[in-house]
Image (cartoon, rainbow, N blue to C red; front, side, top):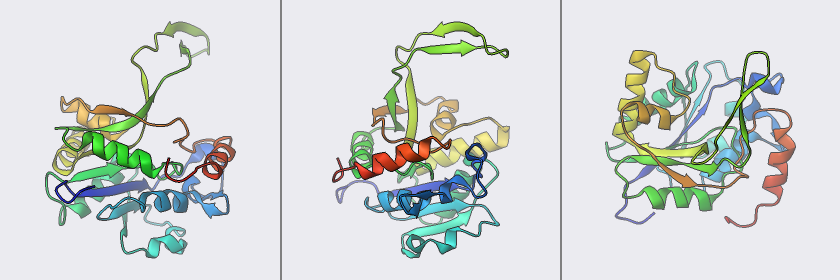
Length: 236
């Protein structure tokens, strides 16, 4: 980031319970190479010169304040919501007193600990002059099947031009706040920030990321994330 580029803030929605992990605590607090997943995620994000990193956690979360990394002055805790986009909206509400309309906001999954500084820099630089913003993602490589309620394949879905969305996703503060406010007002289903922006009629830019920027969702993902972290070299 150079002196003449717009400031950038980060929001990490971390109020989910991660039920698919079948654990007694939310997945963002599960052990990964000796530290909670969320600690790894925040460590990676703190390498980039974000103004602040706003973490939205559940009201009754007893784990967040126990993480040593949360003592960093750039890490701010806010109350999360029942859904991801509500947590992000709460983070944006906190930012309203500090961020300009044209400032950038990156939203990153709490349980995506393998993000690399190089990919954060790549996203920021490629979107620096973009009018809307965009997100990291990777092209779909496997054959896709549409399956019915009985588990039977109904059709093969062409994978050309299909990408798997990742985070961070980066948009202008003003536009993202408007998009999520309208989604909340209409009770629309938005699974990520890009989908909220799309509902306003805008087209986010897809920036190619890395396959190892995985999201810990199921138990099998933990050893994969551990392997990815152990084999990261520098910020490449």
